[in-house]
Image (cartoon, rainbow, N blue to C red; front, top):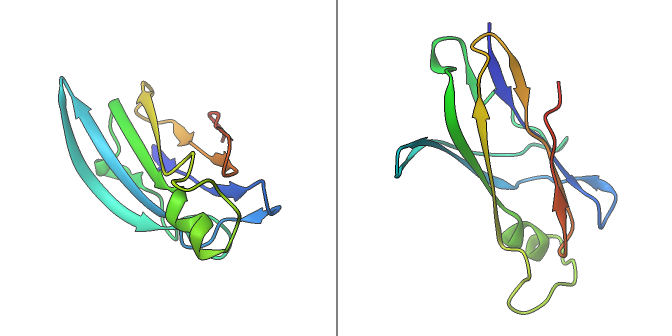
Length: 117
């Protein structure tokens, strides 16, 4: 059974990023449709997969992480306005039975991602 998951690591403070707002969008042509809104838990993960079972499908998607609000909430020094505020990651699911894990490693000044497992 295919599934999509994520987690957020705060590389500036060396810890999981708790309470980061995340929105998942489906990209269909030039349309962007919101599928899910959630937040990370104390471990920087969501409590459940973002998509699993029948909801999981092949296509193009975008995760948007509200890191600006997160860094303000933990009093991490940033620029004003912040250099990174909303971080979008657009990716494609090609394997209907795959596990797609899309983590975000983030500081106020940079971010990276990869396809994890």
